[in-house]
Length: 294
Image (cartoon, rainbow, N blue to C red; front, side, top):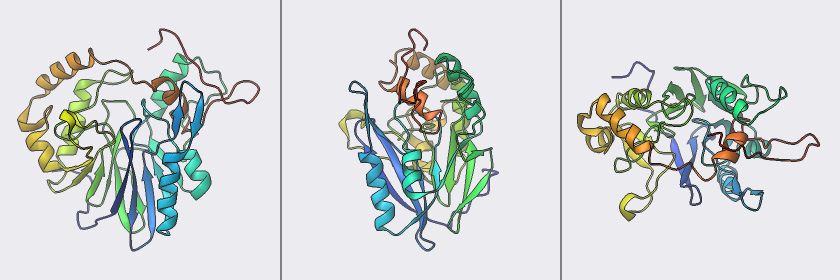
């Protein structure tokens, strides 16, 4: 059982928004009675080759919030994503809300601030975000309590957000037939990821789990919702009692075969800034391409 304050009697409404270009699922999580919501893991569209950023995905989420007459209180990042750009500042400008991420964003900013040779003007103190969350920190979405659970391994700043009977796991877990995310990014660790997954699996069996990504293994339709019980029983990487050593051996071998995400370079530069695009000395939006750095 978990030691975190969980209230399974509270059932938020969850609306999912799938981004086909990055296989990302974003969520609008709301208290239907209080007409208050949070957005989890938003996406800003980018044509990297053309150097063009657009907002179709984010605009769908904004339209949902407005059409349901919801007040946006929180814009949650489960971690610093390496495969898509966050739309957090764009959504905040349109709807308000506080942008929140785990406190270990400071580690990510330090590591990638060096890789991208950022100057002293790039603050590495998390000040780009409105709130830095620690393990066990709580907040509210209307009258529904939420708690942030520290679940590192994929990255040092990963957190799972439990809102009533719904948990948003970021990249800590995939659907049962998808397994788990990689652990070979700077600051990642396969053993830590296994331990974090066990934290998630210690939640009540009926807890609804919502994934940040799905790739449709075997050609099945894209899916994003499962339960703790289903993951414990059938997850191909950790289910059925697989040991920590077995997971580390598998995950390490598997990660060595994976290529880098297509959007890792723009994503990290933008997302470690809470979704803001960096600028050059003349104030023009500009991204860097460090060579042989990752």
